[in-house]
Image (cartoon, protein in one colour):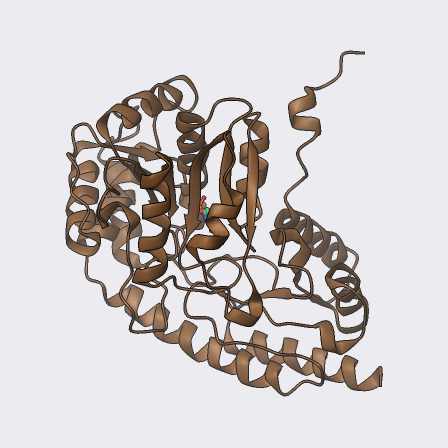
Length: 392
Ligand code: PLP
């Protein structure tokens, strides 16, 4: 029997999909599980976006588009980057529209890493970065951030992760799972680290619009020395509740985007044609629906933080952005994050993601997603509270 590639066999399955699969199995067995595992907005995609895509289908936009993307979407992305991010790119040469931000990240890493290269990844971090690097034969070099300092990113920590094989640094702000929104000083330190060592920056800005602090979102590509080395990745899943549409994009220096385009041409070809028309509506339409969703996320975040902080042994900082709280559960005394996650599922029928899935610095925490309605969150918290009290 032939065996699958070693490259893939050494890559772990996605921890967040594992939680999702387990919840599905338990529900099919009749268990009433509250799922706070995934980062899937529970809102419907705003109507003006869906209407535009449906009209595009009915109008016959059902064929391949240019591999880079529909010209009107490339134009809308470049205008958005200039307006929101102070990032100036040529829509004809410096952007590729991809089927999801996930795919944009994968082809970005493919465009900058060779086998054996290293990419610096501050952690805790999203579960897929290390797996993507592994699939490319490259390695993540983790920079463990300290929860006691609020997961602050420092130049000294980045310097410690540098080796002769370092080729790139990956940054995600607002951050999944910690909720940190990196400030101007932290991102300046990151970009000057990249400039001093001639590295690429891959910047995952998928949660850009989901922030609860006044601090402005800073794009590394807008900082001195950033534009020539930064691939800015963003998408539509989170801000516009468009997870199932699979739409994202990457923008960066012309030469790198030209290389990356080859990966797009030879793999997926292009993002969905009518889906891209939905993307144009999302970027050019009223910001009202996004603002309404963020206001609702704020109320949910406040509820979770206040109720979790009252639980014995739990410490919960308020996230500054994204869709997750990442409480410290070391004081609960029910084992490590994986053990606590299993315990919660068995005793409270609440699914969360263990912090250990997010790399060094994640242990001792669990991630709860508030891409769920207030009644669902209240129910989850009632169950957790009851289970913890019963265990005392
Ligand atoms: N980056 C981060 C940090 C995420 O949390 C996610 C989704 O969970 C993605 C990227 C992927 O987004 P998309 O749905 O566009 O692939």
